[in-house]
Length: 202
Image 1 (tube, helix red, strand yellow):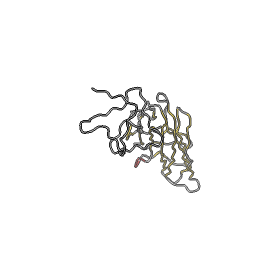
Image 2 (cartoon, one colour; image 1 turned 180 degrees about the horizontal axis):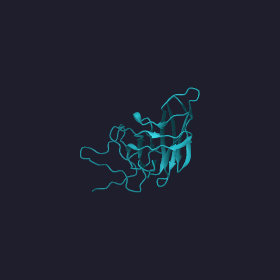
Image 3 (cartoon, one colour; image 1 turned 90 degrees about the horizontal axis):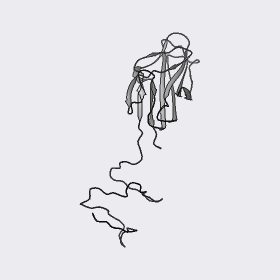
Image 4 (cartoon, helix red, strand yellow; image 1 turned 180 degrees about the vertical axis):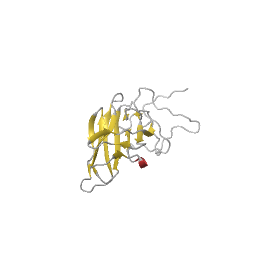
């Protein structure tokens, strides 16, 4: 293999395009391990091919939902037992015991949830969804108050961005519910009660 040592490679006068590699080229390497390749301010990178290894992706990610109705005790804060997985790229969600997400990759995550609460008659009062990390409240969603116009169904939602340590931090969903009598539950029909999240690219 031959080696060319120069300080600057430039186009000749009157030429504005530089071609590196031609018909015999399969791989072009720029630098070696430990080098820094600088792209100055104002330079535009125009890509018409396939780029790999740049930036990042929103993994791990997961999305789970309530596969069957869960009884809800009025005037109580209840952990929602999301028991059915749609996605769980890192196998980090426990859908059988603790119903929590414990990502093994550190970083900032976006979490979201929606909890639908229904009753057997038009007597619902409140539904407030809370996202908790390690047992402490991260954010409580807007309280849904139906006392002035009671119905049989309401949905509380919440979302947040939270930093996770990638080892022991975990996220759970709770809901405070209240009804004016009768039986009530978190609804599973049409996947109306759900929980998910993904790692942010930073």
